[in-house]
Image (cartoon, rainbow, N blue to C red):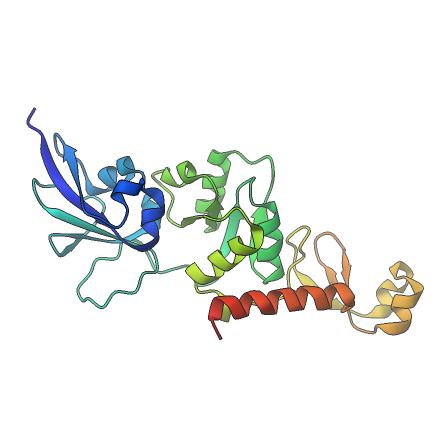
Length: 252
């Protein structure tokens, strides 16, 4: 069977998936038969959920587009802003109310996601197949350190987390998904992901330390696990932490 080639160029953070000699450069991709551009992209090592726009010789195409000999393929990441018209976006608009499911490596990030007020599901014993199924059935964005997980063909929303440091991971998610204006801090339980609601101190006074009852009047309780929250020193530390993260992401 005759061998053909197309010339690929990946942009911005998609280069994180490529070996050094392919980063920020055009390179040939040999192929036989009639492969789709999606199959080619994933065989190169880039998960399809990280891609939002493909140009074939300057024309916007979808994942099912079949490669042609000697054409140039430009591949752009999700959320990349481009000053071009008449393009074919490869997925629906980002989810209006972001919900997440995180893999086993991202336990600390799950707590930070909840601190920001987002629904962040995290269970240590979930398999990759279960994570994908939950993502699809509950419209959750998959956050993972395993790039292989994002290559499942039916995934629609997912991000490969580059950093191994939880604080940097939070910055990464907030920046790439443009979440700063969607934050609702302290509305989710960091421990179980339940919603936090206000509660009268009279209802929980038997559960409070004496000094807490003496110095605080406003309390909230998790509707799922019953954990009680008030604006003590821990609250102030978390607020300062979140303010610093927001500042670093927004660049203000």
